[in-house]
Amino acid sequence: MMTLSSDLLVLDGVDLAFGGVRALCGVDLAVAEGHTHAIIGPNGAGKSSLLNVISGLYRPDAGAITFAGERFAAMPLGDVARLGIARTFQNLALFPKMNVLENVVMGRTARARATFVENVLGLPRSRSEERENRERASAVVAFLNLQNVAHRLVGTLPYGLQKRVELGRALIAEPRLLLLDEPMAGMTAGEKVEMCRFIVDAKRAFRTTVVLIEHDVGIVMDLADRVVVLDYGRKIADGPPDVIRNDSAVIDAYIGVVHDERLEATAV
Amino acid sequence: MTFFVEVLVGGLLSGIMYSLVALGFVIIYKTTGVLNFAQGAMVLFAALTFVSLTEHSLPFVVALLVTLAVMVVLGWLIERFVMKPLVNQSSIVLFMATLGLSYIIEGVAQLAWGTEVHGLELGIPDTPTHIGSISLSTFDLVAAGIAGTMVAALTLFFRNTRTGLAFRAVADDQFAAIAVGLRVSRIWTAVWTLAGVVALVAGLLWGARLGVQFSLSTVVLKALPVLVLGGFDSIAGAIVGGLLIGAIEKVAEVYVGPLVGGGIESWIAYAVALAFLLIRPAGLFGQKTVVRV
Image (tube, rainbow over all chains, first blue to last red; front, side, top):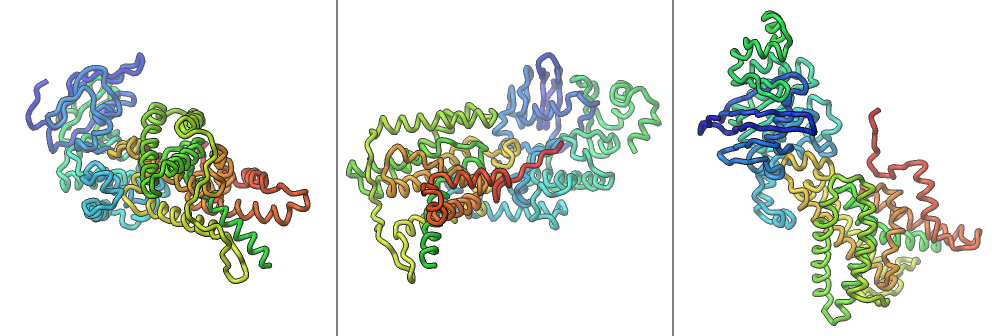
């Protein structure tokens, strides 16, 4: 696959199988720095698998991943955060018994310069870093409009707010690549609109590259610079939203065989 | 009345000693979800290492530092060769592993330091201290002071420091901890080391009271009712549980014992724990598990 120097993330022929089930099948992908890529496709198409390969949770059976010019057969799980990749999860992976600020602060882990020993002994570098992290966390909490719940335990918050905390924890890392796995799943219409605005603002404020999975086609068309369509583990389309919108293979696979008006209706 | 207060306070003081042992369990259980049966063996190992070093005429402080270093190495070894290979195994597997570990640690201690009973002198006077009309054991008071300081320090550590926060994060959700880039195995090593340090303090205080011998490892059995009362994952619970058990033991021994022919102190703690399990299985401070059905 042709790789432009401006591409932050490139996947080359990634294969992934679970036993007999092929979750991903020769998937190529190139994400330009600063772009928002949306991955869409029916349930079981391999969207989450793809995100898990990028974040190191799954090890592909074949193919390669290039991130920021460095080539990997599999992303190193323990180090992805330090490479500059942050993510949110479809079913949330927060620290429920810690408060909102503490959860967000944990997102800075990968950016830490102070060593373990410095932290244990509370040496100056560790302390100034901690102060800086707290300030950043307060700023992120304010940015996401979470001030009122800053000291609440995350496990006691409604689902929509938890999703926002998880976004905050990813943002505070100032990631080069932000992976969002269905950031709006299970939200009310109002919450979706709000979340959508947060993603757009965050992208501008933190100048990050985004790869997101989303079911709501309308939101995808609004947010994404480029849309990738998966079906049965294969990439069946890849292009700007307005091209994808009219791609007949996509319409067949994703929405079923329907009229254009129906697609328009879904998109609203 | 004075006599009752003496009995009660004496019980509370020895209860703090139970808390100290229970604390080692809590630290590991809280962060890794492992019920570490080897905690008693670690207590014994630490005390035996220290006492043997002082018998080889090392000065107190040097022996203490060397023992500390040994406990750090032990913590690292346990993480590297027992816990890491068993990651994601069920809790019963991990529990069995610590059971095996306790025998290995005891065996190694025996090989290295022999089996005879050692006296341990910490330089704390064992004379009664008088407060008003009450007389208390000075040793117990000092021991309680040390244990109390230890508890306060650990509580502050978990609540207020960066490392404490990282410990809590790993305890809360390992998956999320890895996602934000925490080095989980490093934290586990630190947790086991910390439990080793707590074991060292407990070993010294218990060793000074009972003599350093192999039966020292059975102090874990006294920690279990404390954990049942206080909850396995609560530092505060370990303290309150220890105080309660200590007080109940002594008061029951003195006031109820004669009615049933004595010897009540050896089993009353377990009877209380059993009763407690029926009423409040999560303990006084433990996390209640809610299962969604």
